[in-house]
Length: 239
Image (cartoon, rainbow, N blue to C red; front, side, top):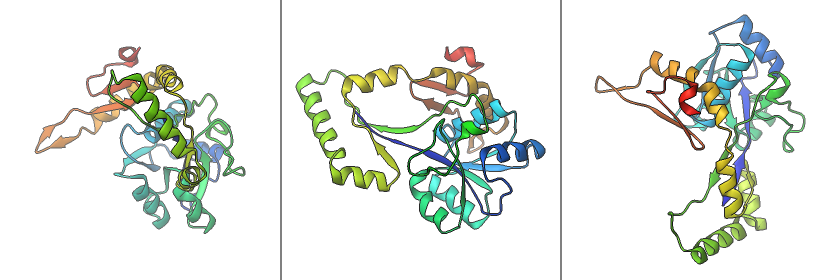
């Protein structure tokens, strides 16, 4: 079952010149390659979204991958990082306290928890959201009665009042769909999103290769059921 989905947002230090997506794009165009942005890591849904924004808007920014979104958010609050991507849950408190501002939600429609905040689509026409999600998987060939019981118990727990409240507080929207619906979602994952950014990410890997003990290490980036690695030559390799 698909347990939950998370809504991401682009956040910035209060002193950052842009306050919405259109202003961010305009500022980035005036300052190509001079704006750094943080994400929870290379190949994360936040990184994929950022690369898609860059391609569609025709802008160039510097990606700074962190080990976690919380680290990136804290650096935005302290002023060490101008902007970053984050799931919405952790940023609500600091935003209300004036420690950071929310530029946009990474979506094509406004988010119920932040109705006053615009979307990425407002400033980047053609943007297709990549939402983070958490799902429960089981080994192939699991007997159907066991699979049904696991799905039913999981859905009962996460859709209870207490389960929904705890996940909502952490910034996650409960789904709890059936195994059949979850399977269809995986099959319908928009591979074209991965294809559109494959060359951009591949070029980044080539420009900044990951090394360990002096040896270049291969990198694999997964998005749904697509995979981009350091041997991917072009978007056609994913189609």
